[in-house]
Length: 183
Image (cartoon, rainbow, N blue to C red):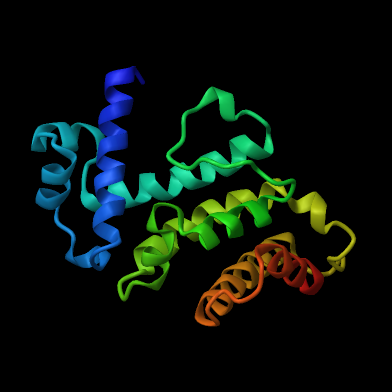
């Protein structure tokens, strides 16, 4: 992606996240996004097929950032998320949630969050697959691997929901410890 395309994409992401801080995802229109990003409708659709596709790409950007940081490859890709990545990918994700980077909490807490959760879970599944070595020795042989991955995934998603509902009182480090202790 050339610099001009990257800047346009970043402007669209920025407008999208700014609107997320003001209203529910379902209430945001493509018209509002392009007006705030100061891009044309054709330009928006050249980057994103639909508003839902923008949401999908937003979620993939988060996980791409986490994967790149875990692999120490962040120099290869410019992300809309910026941080000093910790050793644990789970801690890394929780820290982004705590900082509410790009209004992630607005997406998780929105009434129409099923689409975001679907994208979130799909990317989280890839993340968990890359981290299965962390959970080695905890799975009994008779438990199918697909069930095990699903268990880790749902446990992490429900841990995040519990943490957010509780006002995020615990630190990301504590939540990571809780999560790893029960899986």
